[in-house]
Image (tube, rainbow, N blue to C red):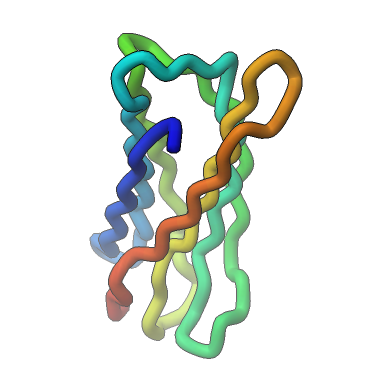
Length: 102
């Protein structure tokens, strides 16, 4: 294993706030991470997709973004980060947040 990751998800005044934090284990190195994150509704339908390439700083990074929800409901965040070293995929971590109501 190369790293640990966590996600947090909240809804404030109809805006979904998404965060994924990642920390590399001591002695592990990667070139970059590719995050793909989805806001999904209670039936599993994707309402928003995010994609971001991230580079570690001091063996960690925090990705965050937000999205204005268009309808009431229950939502959650599912985020996957793929770690690459020397052009090769070395690890994939997927995390899912708790559901939040809007």
